[in-house]
Amino acid sequence: MLEGRIMPIDHAIILHHFDESPFSEKIRLIFGLKQIAWTSVRISRIMPRPDLMPLTGGYRRTPVMQIGADVYCDTQCIMRELERRFPAPTLFPDGGEGLAWASAMWTDRSFFQNTVNLIFGSLADKVPQSFIEDREKLRGAKFDVAAMTATIPQMRDQYRAHVGWIETQLAGGGQWLCGAAPSLVDINAYMNIWYVRSSLPVADQLLAEFPKVRAWEERVRAIGHGARTEMSTAEALRIGQAATPQTSEANDPRDPNGRKVGDLVDVRPDDYGRIAVRGRIVALSGQGIAIRRHDDVAGDIVVHFPRAGFLVTPAP
Image 1: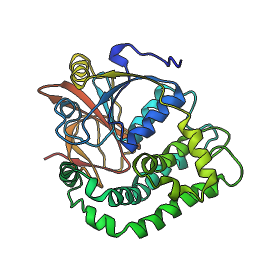
Image 2 (image 1 turned 90 degrees about the vertical axis):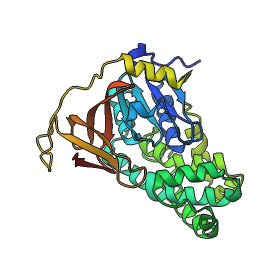
Image 3 (image 1 turned 180 degrees about the vertical axis):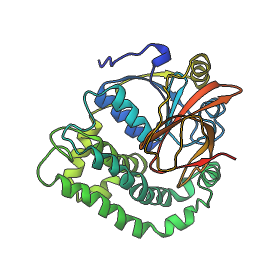
Image 4 (image 1 turned 30 degrees about the vertical axis):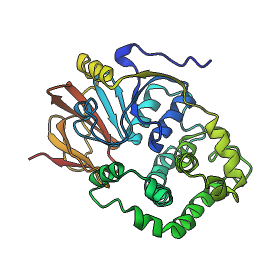
């Protein structure tokens, strides 16, 4: 049985997620790849999330990783922190780190949006009204299942094109997309294959013409999820309340907008779920920003975000 690398409770890796979340599946696979022992906190697929919001300051996309009183938002940010804390085995066994990070802009945006439209258009009247209303609030736009259903022929075309790129990359006979071992590119690319496989009975039909992708899919699935234990949302909140943030202050001397430690800023995604989290900068770099905020329930929390795909603006 996989034991994983176990942390003291105030340094434990806690993932707030739900099992059906495709973005959470990416992080669960990294736990498996790096053989990390982690704690699962299952959250609702829809709001409210009363024990999580005090930790994130209102950020509500899934997943969120918590280590004591440090909270990491967005898979980019979570992956970067896991690679820093657990460098072996690396997510970049054959190099290509820059392109591996950039691959998420393909898988998490255009490929993912195509996949969402295909899945929910196909499920149609099986989608609960409460889920539709929740996603409309998250997106700030209509979650139009009828329109998605109407575009299914086009979504199948586009999904086929995306999967075809993966098949082409595997055509050289390698087991993995970028070398002799699994990498971040495999984790990113797998997400939308997994999402369709776990959501639609027609997945076999959609993937039938891609034998290399199907074999690769099995290899990625076999990586597993590491050593998982369960914790309640209330327990995770108590850990955050009792802990002290561990992030050290760090300025970015090349910040193009002259931001610095101590500045009061709002941070929000630039695509959907554009809920601003306000705090004072603790650490800043070209790839990440961490802000300290005080919550009446959670206490002092440092919330971490990536820079790509997020907006940082001065708070009024």
